[in-house]
Image (cartoon, rainbow, N blue to C red; front, top):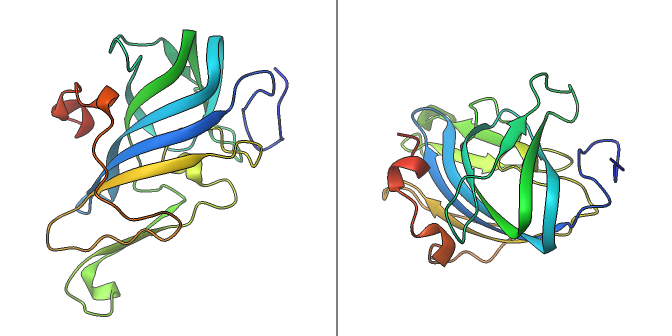
Length: 189
């Protein structure tokens, strides 16, 4: 393994992620996000691909073309800085689909209860992914070497508004590869 930087498990000899499609179900009652993440790599790859994560619970990792499970492991003892390594075994794939949930302790998520907000009537959540906190929202190659474009579908209660600052806010359709997933997988039950 040749690390790109000391704060990431990303291997410099592996293709980097170029695009991520996120579908996020925000659960304000538990301060968690149930999600799918479709990662697109710069090229097909066979071997073990390393991803960074922190306090994320993986439900499954799939080949999005066949929906076959991909073998993976999560390092049992998180590194205090880098978090946990997710090692996914690929066989010529250029995409992988992750189904997972965040933790209430996700370092990039700040959950505010209604009394903590200006209106005192609705909850609020915001993200702050720098420097290496994106890995607590979605498994990724969380290093500046990986320049990643992304799109996101935010699923929130209808009484709440969605604001996305560093991206165009849109009602993007679910990626074709993810449409076949059972909704209970995404929602964690």
